[in-house]
Image (cartoon, rainbow, N blue to C red; front, side, top):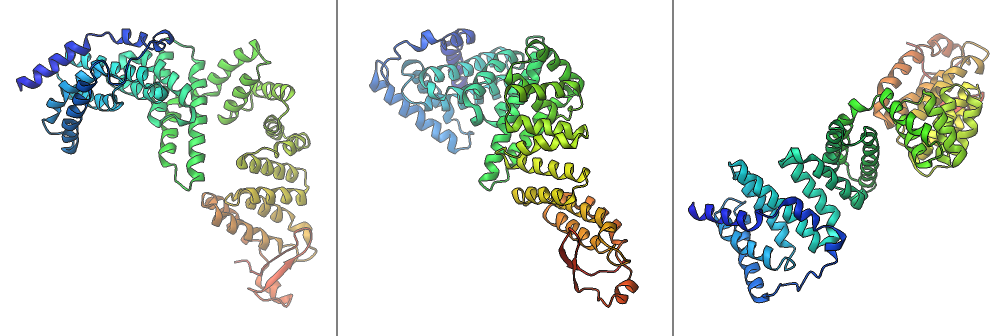
Amino acid sequence: MKRKVLLSFVLILTIGFFSYSGLQAQESNETKKLDLGPKYGKDSATCVMNISLYREFYKQWKQSKYKSSAINDAIEPWRWVFLNCPRGTQNTYVDGTKIMKYLIGKEKDKAVKDKYIDTLMMIYDQRIIYYSSNEGDILGRKGVDLFGLRIEDFEKAYNDFKRSVELQGTKSAGPVLIYYFRSTIKMAKAGLIDDILIVETFDIISEIIDYNIKKEKSLGKSAVNWKNIKGNIELSFEPFATCENLISIYQKKFDENSDDIDLLKKITKILDKKKCNNDQLYFDATLKLYELEPTPTSAYLIGKMYYKLENYTEAINYLLEGAKLEDTVDIANSYILLAESYRSLKNFPKSRSYALKALKVRPDEGSPLIIIGDLYAASACDCGDDELTRKVAYWAAVDKYYKAKKIDPSLKEIADSRISSYSAHFPKIETIFFENLNVGDTYKVECWINETTIIRAAK
């Protein structure tokens, strides 16, 4: 017991007295230009010996699931390596963080624990100096530990997270993104950053998460971890995501610089995503974006806007260009809106054509089939001239609803409701027999529908 206390005390005296902020200063460009010295330091033989010694004890500790007393024998040679040959092996830092977290976890004295936390941060900082190629990843890990162990240092953690995400981009780790957003909120609440940075950080993080979800799905994986992370962050963002707050923040930015294309993209994207697209700001930003950068993306946004305004002719003009987008989800959405626009204009053949295009792009999307079913049901009376032919279109409509819920179970409730409603409009059994037809036989629905279906009677 005395040996453990002594070793811990020596460790604190040897390492912990370095100020955490002082070591951070070593990360400046000037320091990084310094000669880092030979790999194994001035005494290479002793360095190699101590690396081997501490690693052997460390492995014993690890094999015991971090329960054996071998850790006490590992600390002193590890400390020597850390101080005298910091370039000897990157394991010095990987193992060092584990050792320090162990000491932090078991320490009861707050002052001693604070020294250990300082030392842990110094291990991360020194690792960046000697192994800078992993800087983004290391900063992320450092931020997570600092935020979790010393919440009052959230500003330092925030700066580490921000730099980490800048460096890592789509390779950022999930926990880093979660704590980056939480630290952003704390920074805003403390008045250290503008509230708009909460929205902008959410936007950056969301893009990274969405990228990784798509990547996982493309590899045939469930992406459940990334979806959970997305849900976690969206839950934290919810209190700040009201249309009133978003518009209040972005209206001022738009008024100050309406020609900033990046800003316009952020405004249109976040307002569209949060369904704040009834506001004049969304209208103005969308039109301005198309004026400055007439891309399929901006055309798609304008098309959606005109569709909501029930100006279907204008909506179609822009949505046709929006359908040239690269993302299959956006393409399918463009086709669906085109189908809905043509339906509103009573051009049912065109509406079906674009619904089928959407289905081809997204064969697992059931909404195009719901649209087609609705088109058939709406055409029933106009596609016949007697008691039978004015109702046969309902057979074809119900076929589409059944197919929609089969490929897209999320539409089951909608499809079942329509099936129940329109099945009541099937021809009566007497009418079927009168026309010399049989329930269960095939039947060709004429008119513009021109599809083969199954004869059924109303119940």
